[in-house]
Every structure is written in structure tokens, then in C-alpha cells.
Length: 361
Image 1: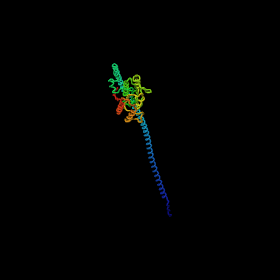
Image 2: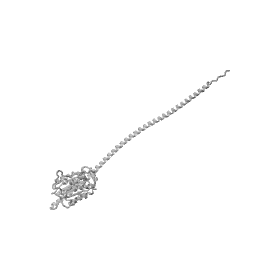
Image 3: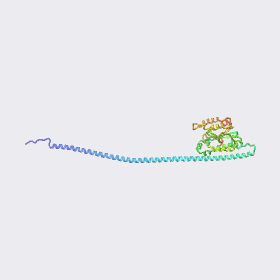
Image 4: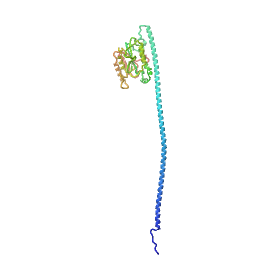
């Protein structure tokens, strides 16, 4: 019997080989499926993240719109607040202006009342002088300028010269004795300035001086602030007749129309004395304090007491010699050197210093 031949590559071997290849293929198939599942899972996660980010962007967009609305509302509120603040500032300014107007009106009313009182006193004094004059005409031989009543008022000042010059300070300081009130009146209207009690008192003093002029004398009235000029106006400057009531009335009327303003230049006032020919033999100076400027305005806005004293000394040096200067001083508060300086001037020129009470004349 023939021996069976053994074949190494038989059916069993092929089966094994096929099974191995099948296992490998199955392994690769399983691995590929697992990778696909992971990719699907990763894609799902990424998609979920994208959806979340989309929702966040949409939420941020909505919040951004809300913030923009809030900013626009805040801007509108800010603009409204600015408008309200501007309106309130305008209202405050208007109220302050109204209050200032009320203060000026009240000040003008008080000044007007003071002026009326001064006018009443002047009329009463004129009435007394007329009555005294009538009595003196009834008794010849008496001096019409030396009655006891007048001596009580003039307190030593007697108009005795043949050529009498009256210098009237018309600067802004003649509005009041207090610096704060001067500043307030300086910003008022011209009517309030003319009605200021101190200026009305100055006008009454000049009026009183005019009534005391000797009939045979010559006179002139100069008003001065930063410059000096005669109330009668006209050039050349000459003397007026003391016995001419019409010329005197015109001078007093011009004085009534003056509005006090600007600073005080005493040297210009004293220099104007030399315009008169002949020179005066008596000067009546009506002022309230030391000068604030020289021949021209200084470079500085404010001036101290020492500089004002130097300006006073320069002005006195420009006076003609041997001319008596009688001073009627209406002192300002705080100008402590004025009384001493004007007293020395009056004493050096054989004149008189008068610092009258507020109810004089």
C-alpha cells in the first residue's frame, strides 16, 4: 500500500492563515470604528463648545446693547444736568443782579432822604439867616457876618479875602466815608451818585460858603478830581463878582450837576491856582483825604499811605506863597494821616482846619 504523502501547505494551514488575516482585519476594523467614535465624540464636544460660544456672543451682544442704552441714557442725564446747572447759574446771576439793583435803589432812597433832610436844614438855616438879616437891617451898625448863630456854625472859618478861591473835591471818595460803600456807589447810576449823602453835604457846604462871600469880594469855584477846572467854565479863567447873585446861582447849578468820579490829584488843583490873575488871597479847600495820584495816573493800580503822603507834600510845594488855606475836611474812615497833614497845611499858611459834624451846615 502506497504511503500517503504529507503536504505542509494543506487545508488546515490555509485555514489558520485565513483566520489570522481575518483576525487582523477585524482588529483593524474595530480600531477604526473606535477612532471614528472618538472623532464623533470630539466633534460633538466641539459643536457643543461652539454652541456655547455662540450663546455667549449673543448674550454679550444683548448686554452690549443694554450698556449702549445705559450710556446713552447717562449722556442724556448728564446733558440734562448741565442744562439745569446752567439754568440755575443764570437764575442765581439774575437774582444777584436784582438784589444789587434793590440794594442800589435802597441806597439811592436813603441818600435821597438824607438829601431832603439836608435841604430842609439848609432852608431852615436860610430862613434863620434871613430873619437875622432883617433884624440887623432894623438895627444899623451891626456886622451882618458876625452873628452869634453864624459863629457857632462856621467855627473859626471867616471869608475875609478880596479874591477868594473855593476848591471842591469831586472825586469818587466824596460819595461816602466808608470804602466799601464808595465802591458800591461808584457802580451805581449818576442819579444815585448825585444823591449820595456825603456829596449832598459837600454841595450844601459850598452853598453855605457862597452865602458868606463879602459883597465887595471877587471869587471863583474850582472842582477837581484828576484835573481841576472852574465850575463857571470858559477861558481865560477870571474872577467873579461876589455881588452878582446870577453868576453865583449858575455856579451852584453847575455844582448840582456834577457826578463825583475818578481819583484825587491835589497837585493839579493847587497848580490851577496860578491860572488866576491876581492870585487869590484866601483858599477854601473842601476835601476828604490825601491825594491818590500826582499830575498823571501812576503805573500801580493801588497806592499805599506813604505814597499818598508824598503826593500831598508835592502838591503843597506847588502852592503860591503867602496864601492862607482854610480846609474843610470830611474825613474818610482809615485815612488817619489826613487830619494831621491838612492841619499842618492850615497852620503853615495861617489858615484854619474845620472837620465839621455830619449835620453841618
